[in-house]
Length: 212
Ligand SMILES: Cc1cc2nc3c(=O)[nH]c(=O)nc-3n(C[C@H](O)[C@H](O)[C@H](O)COP(=O)(O)O)c2cc1C
Image 1 (cartoon, protein in one colour):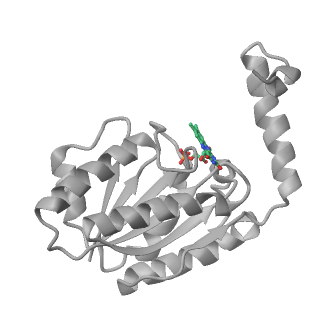
Image 2 (cartoon, protein in one colour):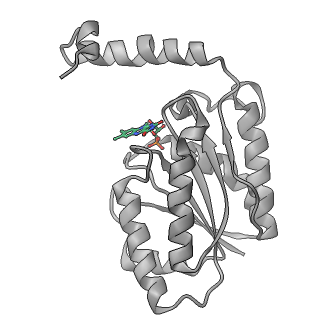
């Protein structure tokens, strides 16, 4: 089976979407041909969009942007739809690995609906999605084995996704949080990211709360 893995993060280098794809790859590699594409730093070539449509399974990994899909990936989806309008004979199943900044993985439910509608328009089968909350935490979890500690829920979700991909089947989507208290995530985000970022940009803490 040919599986095309697409990193849809607008970040040009290290991304949480890349982390999720790297975790999935070993679970689906055996006996399958894996092709990796990314929408950044350069847009996909027409030949890469064709390659995407030649897959048996497509895995779209992307961050949630304003409850939806980042524009760089959206452009690819529009191009794929145009290609499929000309020829939709190939049976393709689409899976998604979405990560979002808020703690709750449920945030990505609307993006999953968008993907389902896109699948219908393209004549693709929708496989399943994993929606991971607190995505920005993943970058610091490289040494944590999948299925352990804060990545316990992600381990289970990845197993379910990989099993569906290997069977060439669909399964119910899952939306998860890391196994880490919400309050600790919030404090880490405020004190470890928002306040230092404000300072770096010449702003005070109170400026972050200002209403325009
Ligand atoms: C322009 C923009 C819009 C975003 N919108 C949302 C959002 O609606 N909900 C959310 O939970 N996170 C949102 N985020 C946070 C990203 O989803 C989060 O940082 C993610 O982990 C980035 O993943 P990546 O490293 O794969 O690009 C947004 C981030 C940016 C830059």
